[in-house]
Image (cartoon, rainbow, N blue to C red; front, side, top):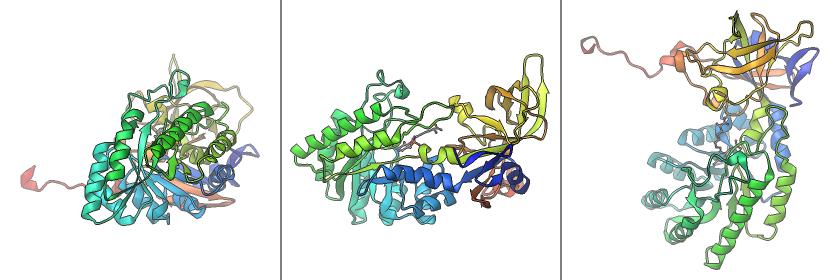
Length: 419
Ligand code: LLP
């Protein structure tokens, strides 16, 4: 990204050198560029004219300051839990701009969402629909509802989503959904407003999205013939970004075509739920080299960030670029595994990287703004990293590094006679 790049041989986030960020805030450290976040958001909006709406998928990065910056841009939000709902509200997001996805919403979460007055429940099963009806009736409210259907886009044609559309737990099968739409239309405390789908994540070509869109528009037409008029169609997120110089999804092309398709449906407001495409390239994870260890087989660069701080490489074999904060051109790079302090062989950030680093150097794991901190844990009793938001030459701590008190908050020692 333009906002995170080398200047005078040092990696900068906007106008601040990463070395000074670590000196000031410690390591490991998540750093976000405010202007990159805003740029990413505005790029989507450029090709997505009102009344169509964008709901940022909070799970990608739910730091309050990140949500606040996006709320300030007028963002809507796609949430998957009561916790995310409360984060959005705490960050100044508007309740009516919230859509609530997720396969197993609890009673408490449904009550909270109804009390708050969210914009839409993205309902994923008939059982969930009935539960929302019951709770809404007890609260004497109308629940705005969209049904998530599984358009089962041909995975063979599109290997990026070959993780199986039919066999997954999300949504309601396209055929089956007709009956559920009818049921929803009859329920007294359900206000059926739309349909939604989400076909997967990190999708690099527009075809599967457009296939899904065509099927969803067909559904809208079919339902209309049966007297069910939907006013909103949410096509989810999943817009692929470039981690390794691949060509990213051509958003403008895709969005323009969607807007074109939507013209035949003047009563339908379109929605999208981008997460990764907004946050990924707006963040880096800075980590310090603790030791170098060379065995006969391999050279290990042992860093202070582990799989508990950044899970994607371990969990998905995801490839993230890892670069030295200070560019060195003098020596030949050596092939190294970049591994963390966690006691697992699967704890790595990158394998077989050509890097020229020594002890105490600082490395940057790039494109760490999405599904980075949000997937962090306290495994090995490691406090989660601090988070910083940079704007120009100003840096603000937006989440403190966790300390021991944070780690044991809520834990209780046993009474003496109970041991
Ligand atoms: N909407 C729904 C209903 C979703 O399930 C998701 C992501 C999104 C929107 C946002 O998708 P995005 O635009 O960010 O691709 N932890 C994984 C990604 C899991 C995505 C789950 N759902 C990773 O680190 O790659």
